[in-house]
Length: 628
Figure 1 (cartoon, rainbow, N blue to C red):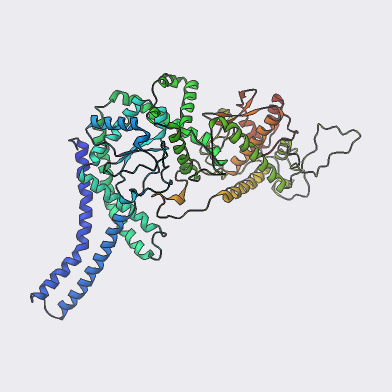
Figure 2 (cartoon, one colour):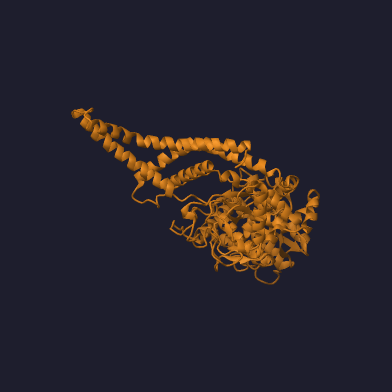
């Protein structure tokens, strides 16, 4: 394993973990030892009499019960299936150059080479032990790992004892070959301490305890045995708490030993590569929240997310002068060239990302189909805006909101427009603007004793929308121009909108969206023998954002209606911005000043800024729009 100081610390902590296991075994054997002593004393004539006979019976029964309980706990700890990270397995035939790079790196570090390579849709890399029998053949269906990435064959299952190298897929597409090798050096160096018998045994013991706790908490795995499961869980948690400090220090020692050994390999390049790690993480997070999430909500999953990271970071290098130096490195060989079929692997990791971060199905279907970046504006952005606009008008119909007469229509000699005609027959932006804009500070529609029909309510004014002015032009995570991250407004969910009409409409919109999402949610799938060793029923495992508030939903829907009106009246087109997601293009130019005007309407009931913007671009709000 080497003579690194961290390795010695890790081994010492591993021995401390194993001593806890030995103490637990000694405690379990203590009643049996006492029973043996009493039985031996009785057979030799030392412990005679009725009292000793009763003691021998009681202690023997107690020993049998304790041994039986200890055997059950030990069996559960040994047989419980540890959780593994959801990954896309990469067979050696699908990436021979990548395997060769990792093995050469292991030879330079003088450590065992990882037994296999897998990709994860995240910006991280680590070693993962999959020596448990439950992780071996036969390979499960394509649920925890996308089968046949790059070759169409079954998953490549390892049989050796070395851990699996898990690589973040964005690294392969953004980093160059030399940068990837430098970043993987300290990770691959960790196979040395992992091969040390004491450390490997301590890790297996801790993973077994963790899996036993999870198994005892899952009522589906042991129906009718809740009491036994509770006892097993209590014992496993007790030992796990005793191992916690030692296991943490052991892992720190392993990491320190790996970092010390990796210093001799591409140390200078590794410093530069760490900058690319942070940049890739920022681009990946932006791509998921601003670009992928709107598509996932529409039942479409972008099939080239990793390629999208390159486009997003290239766009960032064009906009940001601090990133200009990163563009020159794009002429070097990218690490994805180490794969035989990078497009197939990218599609597999993109599908897994959609499943982990959004909870989508494991396979494509009629309601869950891939979308290319070229089709994204028409298949995602346009459909999203028109679907939201249609939902907005449906809610207005439910509330009984009537269309105001068209002030531009000629009335001389003809009958006046019927104000009872619902706008659902010819949905217009004017209907939304008129409803959200109280007349002279109060609602004038008599006979409606609801929140927005109360004549005592006046239009409240506020300046909450003004705080968004500095963020003009940035599309938010929900997929609309100018929608900001809800994390930046911690009190919005509890603070009602100043505009009472907006509050009522937002509430009904929230109910409608929740109903549609509940209807579209697939039924939970129970744990089966061939399901992945991670909780398949708890998807998404890593939600990107908290649920949108009612105010944010209303802002999204009003923005969608404005975009639909712009597309249908002045020929605007939907577009895709790699950093900000869906965007509106007017004459090929990206709209950058829509967000504060919509917020002024939604929050303050002030439609003047938005109407001025519509007049400036020639958008006619009284014209009907096509809904989705």
